[in-house]
Image: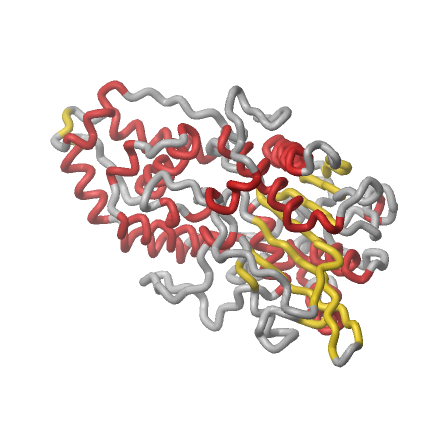
Length: 439
């Protein structure tokens, strides 16, 4: 695991807070915005201040994915199996593959890479500068993390960035770490629905449409490699993992065109849609517990939930306070997709096509849950005819969500209307949670 201490990481000094807005998107490759969940964080839009007559009273809540990491153990094994086919080739007929003659595997497993540490540090600094008016000695952010090492370290790095931006005046700590054991109730990790089954049919259909030309090209360039369709997404992900690890463009990126990475993005879009998104009948229910925690914070009332919440933690003002102005939770991409779906964000009239990619699609994983991707729910007070009312707005990677399900579609939603709109969560998933355990 990787930790930033005093703003440094093995000699790497994170960018000054004043530079963050201009450097939020680190450019390694033209294709990086099409790496799906392995895309480095970038703001989809420039942050917009609240409308005139409105002021933020509570930044509730920052929900953030861990920073850039090495591949997980399962992904690492799949990538290396596909890579070995290229390494076993009897000869290379394309100069782009010559680097493989001396190539050696050097990636770690699952832990944060230095870039991942810096991403979280920058996020902490950015949140401080944006919401510093909500913070004082007696009102520090309340920080929780799911128990995976990369998630906990992302939370730690975030607190360091927050403290650094405040010139060490305010140093929040990670107050709650929620176990990721299969038997643990955890609203920050999708591990409580054993009957959830992600369909791979749609993803594989699209893979088998976009990959044959790549398979033919690589097998021609690497004689005897015997690359198959299922190897292509693994090799394309290696481009992303090596790039974020080394902070320079991997030579594997040169093996694929920009259009092919666009097809790879759609492959990842389909995968998440049918993993914990709307395409899985038991996908969105895995985000219900978190949504009910969010509603409790917004209303300042105890959590009402009978799904994933840990009642011991959530019933205590020490481990689940309701009086803070800034909250920060650290999680995983699959859980965040479930939460977006439970909230009703990014609704789809029709499922993403498994036979073609649409440039008009709003279900784009690199924009939903990139490395260090984040959702911010802002509670604000606005005056209408001189009367104050509470509103909320939700930003995903700084893009304001329309919230048409509870407002005029302009991104502002009355607090009561927003709470009322969350029927699925308030009804504990309308019976879907029980289906997670039916035999």
